[in-house]
Length: 318
Length: 318
Image (cartoon, rainbow over all chains, first blue to last red; front, side):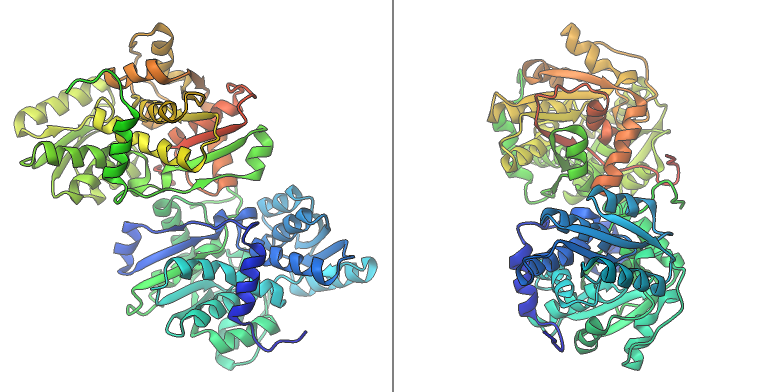
């Protein structure tokens, strides 16, 4: 079932499949933020999604498709910095499946608790992509579970694209959509949705400067790996773009820009104070691109996917 | 224009008057919270309202009515712990009026900044009701401004009731509505809306144990004053119920319960972590009543008005 790139139809089908189980999250805006950045910004609040991140969209779509393609499935497995893990555990629980989540032992406690809340089995690993993958492979070999990869999976990519689809249905006049980019599931899905609806909508991915694998790869037009990055945006610590989302990103994405750690923190603060919502560092990354002056002022109606809101409040210091 | 109590019609008229300027705020829920408290809880997120609190509803309605009843009005004045002040400044600015806000000098800096953002003129006073009122009287005498009292005003009460009206239109099956209670504007408006729609819906006010003027007054069936309370719920530091809202509260409210400071803090934490939104201490007070076991388990569908989200992040410690 190889496909070269994702299509709008894939996302529309995912939307129809999951619309009754995912939350149609609100879109917020703030006079203060609009005045400060000189553009109208519309924030699609996936931090308010079930499990606290957009990842529940992709996981719901993947599990739903999986239960059709393999009605005998009993177990799923994945690796995750936390949000995909909780999302997969929740979607699996809703379908009566068991889920095993390989998580770096450095994952925020909130994200660990979030997996447990939905009865996911956690297997801790070292905070490297190699350790994640070898642990997943071992579990696949031992248990015969089905892999639901956090981003290198068309079912996941299509599900993640439904957030942008909802946003653009509500605000078809946007001329730029910004998303954070880690492995590329959200960005590839969002870009496919936007360009499928209107080729004039620009789509950009934003990632931390110190986790710039997508930035380097986009410019080189081939997937480039980096060493394990230490960014505070713990959801974006992937070391290499996924093969499947990257092909779609090359096709549909206009640019990838990077932001400083300091700007990510400032963006979080702006969102907490002025939108009155709790966003995790990864979710604040797109707004950080405006703080860093990386977005052309010609974009006057900007949609931002606020990816998630899971972080350890105790450990956080402004 | 004396009226004995507020009516549903007053609130419906306010709704029609302000629906294009106020945000139709989202209603959030959380599996974790529902499981923990054994009831389905629906949170009406007025922290996401313009100016960060429900107060913008009452202020918009009052200013809108005022501009009709006195077309020559140029200036308004009020006293406020902060949220009504910002709301009045914003509504006044939208109507081309100037607003002067008498605020206790101890008001959170965020709330001061919020008034300034909408070009409100701040006059600082001592943190006592006496100092607030004497400063307002002086300004009224000196400037001929119109008073828009934070709660002892039918226009304000009617506007505040529109949040419960929206909530109950979306969820007509609620059997209990909980609101924080300070001066009584929100509680009187919410109770009028709920009982007007369905007499079977119980309505309760919740206030800090150490700011229990409404609790004492409700039981005595007459307005009782207390000394200036030091609760962390800075929006609920009123010392005596307002005369007009109190008459309506006696008519329509089922009970008033009190909560500990510790429970308010715990409730805030639950809301931040599981609803992923920033709520100020006053807004967490209704959920604290569930933490403190003050709500009968027979109430299985509970609506909560989350009143606001304005607090100093720098000063906050868990």
